[in-house]
Every structure is written in structure tokens, then in C-alpha cells.
Image (cartoon, rainbow, N blue to C red):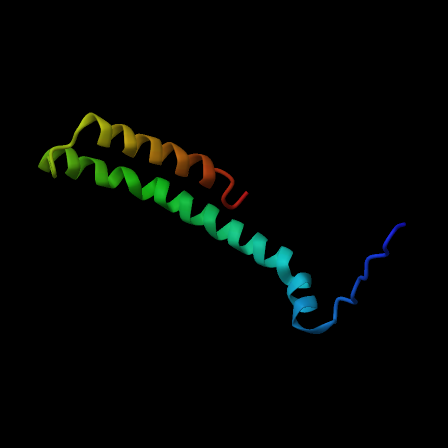
Amino acid sequence: MVVPQMSFPPSFGPLGRLSNSLPAIVARLRASACGLAFWTAIALPLGYLPLFILDVGGLSIEMLVGLLVAHVVVLVVGHSYQQ
């Protein structure tokens, strides 16, 4: 026995309005994340020099690798910004 599923019209209360605008919200959040990653990728290297010169907190190899991995991640995520 197949049970029919009910589908509500898009204007059925707040849930219907939310389901209509959900793709736009997701697209806007994705664009914001790409923009933030892009500008972080640009600004991140500005913090490298003071870390090397001032030796803040005894910069270790693990911290350096972590910074480089973070930089690669934001480069990949922000690559499609404004394309």
C-alpha cells in the first residue's frame, strides 16, 4: 500500500515562505563564506612577518605548518570569490 505524501502550497505559513527563500539564503551564506575566505587569504600573510621577527610564543614547526594549512584552506575556499 502506497501512502500519498501531502505537499503544501509554497504560501502555507512561515514554513512555506522559509522553504521558498532557503536556496537564496544558502547562496548568500556561501558567497559570504567565499568572500571571508578570500580576504583572509590576502590578510593572513601579513601576520607571518611579525611572528617570525618577534618570535611570539616561540613559533614551533607545528604552528608554522598549522598556519600554512590554514592559508591553503582559505585559498581553496576563497578561490571562487567574485567569479
